[in-house]
Length: 281
Length: 45
Image (cartoon, rainbow over all chains, first blue to last red; front, side, top):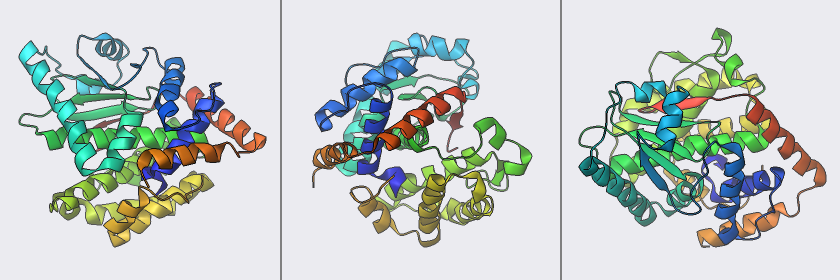
């Protein structure tokens, strides 16, 4: 699966760095610094030089997002976080990365490459967000009682969105713009909001995100996501396939890989797909 | 194979990209940036 393949994502990031005018990174050690230099040219706020920078609702990112009404749903009812809350959530983010490195090293590798900034806030919403024009940034409003695994799954969830944006930047996924894909004639039944028609690109994103989350849950013997969404995931894939002319040829390859997983729920395909080196663009 | 080794191999591989291929990626990046923002948010959206 190209959308969860280390080789494919690294090659794509390398190509983007070069396309943006940077020097092509020669090895793994040069990749993240080169990508962060590229992000500095795409975003209003520079990424940290290494690691993930955690901030809160009153930080530079929090102010920018609120001012520009990005992630309005997540910011709905936002209130201040105290020092105790900040310390506890900040620790959870770092424990989540530790958990991913220990249990899911390939997902950790992708997350550490693609997520550079995490904004944590307390609001009426629970969940995370990422945006196509703000690569590297993840916003999270944690729910009450969230554990390290919830933080880890949210980071992987948003990393998968960010990865799809990277692949879209490098190779293009759709033949139409995101605004056009929101029109009624391009909508597809959601894999998650059962029965709801969603914009074509958002339906595809949400279905792709299901794959690593189902994989992580089955690895620890849980079936909640599979039980809840296995059927609707197939329905979503069928809807996307019926309108697959909205995809570019490259997007159709990703859809075929997603559909194959949805129909077989073959986790060995996900596992082996992380490290295959034969998946071309 | 270690993940860093896979990454280094991937980066070596793009050194063989054609000029045309690199130009297409540059055009794709420009078009993507010009399209404007698309946000993905929610519990599992």
